[in-house]
Length: 120
Image (tube, rainbow, N blue to C red; front, top):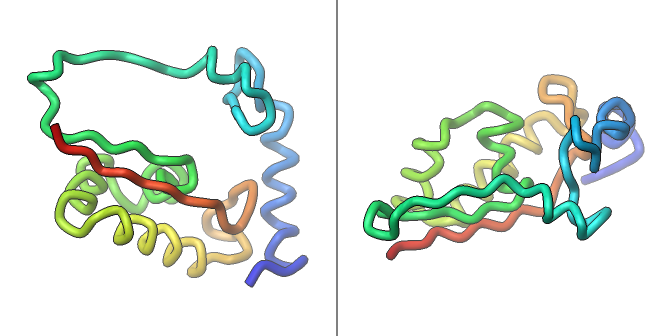
């Protein structure tokens, strides 16, 4: 459950990160400014080289890029073997194991998470 005591440490982290948001030298958040999409990192590979793809919200990618509890390869394997619900369950477990953000400082204790695993 999110309470003022679970939000306080995370809010401190958010204030530290706040000035970095939606700036050339920082990160971009489309929910704050839709023009952030113009700064998305993009790339391409030949369609024949794609064996699978994942589309993840920042809440779903937390397992790798924020919590460092899995690699991208392990995450793709989890998605392939157990599906998107298993990834989101792993993220929720990590969030609940550190609700105050003491071991894993973050902007908010819990984030919405969306994952899709795609096969050609």
